Length: 368
Image 1 (cartoon, rainbow, N blue to C red):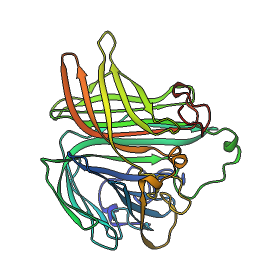
Image 2: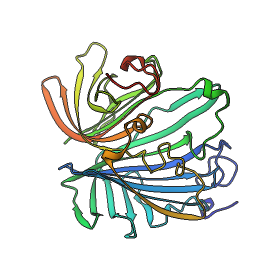
Image 3: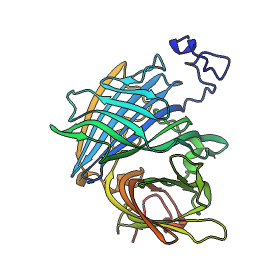
Image 4: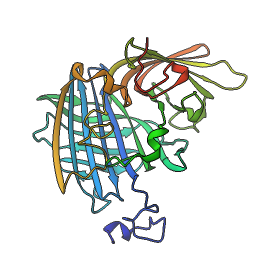
């Protein structure tokens, strides 16, 4: 079926834009943003995704403010892939790879905003993320990442925040490809051979540069994918070497409370980053990223459904938190030779299932 996008010279395969090259049900195309003040009192995450082979588009905004976990979410039937709106939520590309506007119109939700992201470094294309399970491709994704500053306004529980680029930061990414989405599929034999998910994804903004790293490891600690780069406004990305991690867990849980990262080039002294985790946003709770049986990314909700969810962070079960990554607003101290630099940004971490280097042998054993 044709759409207005077919008038643009952007086709990649011999079929209309609405029809992606693969028939895999799990194909997706998603925006992610985060936004925070340097004072660190709240952490906003926004997402919008399309699932062409499921015929669904959905979006969310989740705020961590004090002990409040506040979620707006919406879902609708996907028709025109150029339509980046879901109910009162919309995304506008003002200047590709540089400026984007995200708007959540005032409604029954406790949060609304009109925010413009302006990039501070060039968009960086990450290493391809690829993984199989029992011969089936379960991850095959492309993604780029970018740090920036925000301008506009944000209202949470009736309190308006004037968002200025001097004091509000964030990062965004765009990813697309294949990853598990939609209603759960029958596990079949996969239930007898489950995979772990050990994941660190950190985006750090310093005054004159940004640092990006991510690590995925299997059950014994072998690397599935890894990357560590420094990105400056007017220079080629600088490879920082192999990333290593040391995570500190709260006793009796898998909640990460602090971390140290090191990047080591051959024949060079390591770069060390101490990560102070300021505020945890449990973005998997209610947004579609997690295991909620009634709301998952790409799940069919109806022609248009707009919904809200609210929880106290203290009421989020620690056992449930074991099965989803957590996005932390973090402060970073990077030491590189004689120089030390302070920055802020995202520290996303998930330690799901067995991971021998962390001392976990099953899906439910906590840290001692």
